[in-house]
Image (cartoon, rainbow, N blue to C red; front, side, top):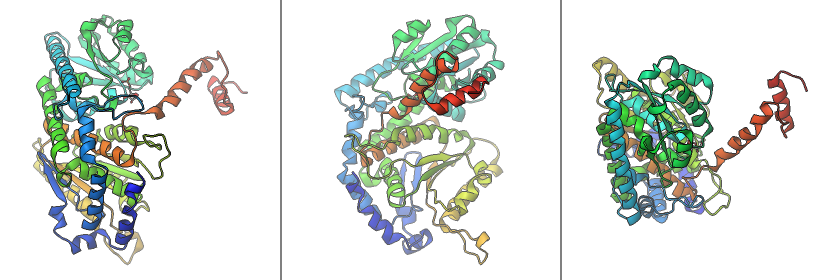
Length: 502
Ligand code: F6P
């Protein structure tokens, strides 16, 4: 795949002496030509450091990599995760963009789980329960947490709380404010073998006293039953959904509780519309394709080591953490699908935070630091609050930052000089509706997958996280003093923890 991207370097070198303001002055029409709309999402790539010739090269790579067929393979349920022998059919959780027999069968399973989820939401709504604790971690936490934080209304039927970290302080903090008689809990774990979720689930089960208000979402019905949660309070998951792609499944139960089932279904509709767009739009008019090509350009032609994501909407403050798992767990790989070493860089470090808070923390480095950090800026046109002056100022800041980063400003005083030439993409949502948020997340999912195709890596496994978990299991008895650690440094650290000198 390295060869596929070879030609890009020549374009980067050709453009090295042409900073963004010059690129735009030479071709002002790119302001609108490098923009596209997909339903409620408007995307503008005019402030990326490519010109039309470099874009032609990128789109010819997209054709040679056959990204259109890659989308079909994903959505039809082909085995896009060969190291685990699995499909990645999150598309079937939200619609029927592709009509293979496997995808349609998966769709039928998803719909029947949605029906059961609706029943459980209704039965809880008819009970005295006011609060629900969602217990899960990683893909079984970050998506629902993001959506609930972004879209739950203050007058929602349930308040939903999230418990992920195994640190007992997290459990203590969540439980401190709640009344066990009016609280239900749901343990979400694809494997039902995740240490954090089992530890926290046991704490909450004891705290509830009455375990009839404990629910589960998992692929592993046996382990769930072993934990004491019966099938009538268990919602299914399937191997063909990856954890970090699973918020559209019953993993979204907390979303349905916070937004109502109709709100959850609207989220799915938005994602389904993006699936259809990703599958059918020609490459040049295809938003995930533009986004993925831009990511590869910034990483492999401009050698950017990190990528910022900067939502200018407080409701999206958790988007950076959500995307960190989606992007870095998917693309943090250094071997190709065939197991050979990859000869170019894959995922950069993704990080970010909500504007305008971040303007007052790390933007100094974005403007004048030695590393260029490409950024995705995300804005929302409709405010959904009554403070018009704040919203106008927020949007003015959003536009100002993208302009300042791109154009910079010269000065005789080196300390007051802004180098500019710092690329960004602007994504504007008409309004932060469940549909629009569903589309935005699906856009990132598909961009991630297409990047993996361009790099020739597997976006759907995550073996990198296993070693640390295995070592932690082995070190638990050592921490209790039942055995010694093998590693000399760990031995010294254990001695320190036990408060005794070696
Ligand atoms: O951290 C690795 C991981 O396997 C993630 O991929 C996953 O989202 C998370 O753990 C939680 O896994 P589970 O849903 O099985 O509890």
